[in-house]
Image (tube, rainbow, N blue to C red; front, side, top):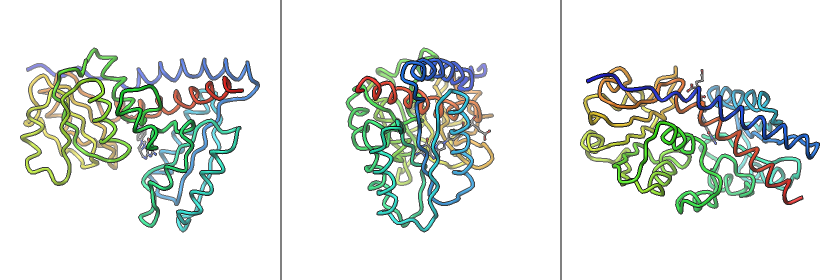
Length: 283
Ligand SMILES: Nc1nc(=O)c2c([nH]1)NC[C@@H]1CN(c3ccc(C(=O)N[C@@H](CCC(=O)O)C(=O)O)cc3)C=[N+]21
């Protein structure tokens, strides 16, 4: 079997960011106000600090302002909700990103719901979940949205395909399955209580790995010719898929790094400009 073709997220993300930058410049020219993303970080988890910095840097290169709100690890849910409501009400802010995961003492759902739906450019609110699951226009969760763009770019139509999503987190696995279902895939979710993960993965035409367990998915479980999307974030840029064995069986596969990660950020930037354009139309 020949090796899989790589799904090059870096290249596609670059094109999306370029288009987004043009839209941002156009909007700034027309309104005199740049699109603005508020990034909210609770605590000092080193990985989260790095991710937020990457997102803010990418904003800058696209002509999007970012306003960073850093809160101490001891912040209560109430204080976090107050901060998010203030950003939701601030007309100079067009999008809000609340970095996940937060401290275990925080009510993450209450925090996400304090984000105004029209500023939910990270696609984490109930409102965005509703539009995603019905396949209606609206903000998508950034990583799942980036995955769908990659599938489209490489000519993979999910309709009628068996998609197995490994993981069910609120910002990744669950919405990824919903978007695939909205595009008529037959979707199976696997998670920590799944009895036989290998058996499920072996049936998949499309595998989305999104659990954060290094190299959990092995080539021997990949159906020959399957499309393999590795959305796992692990330390040291290692995915959830054992790339070297999976590349021998898949027809298409995302590298890590350079696959899903850059697409996540491109989707965030694009949706921020979309939110700013909508705000400008509202006057
Ligand atoms: N509310 C929320 N929304 C998120 O979208 C979100 C989050 N919380 N928490 C953490 C994860 C992680 N995440 C990444 C984004 C880009 C790369 C990325 O671009 N990675 C590069 C590698 C970068 C490097 O060189 O280190 C790549 O894969 O090529 C990775 C990880 C977004 N997340």
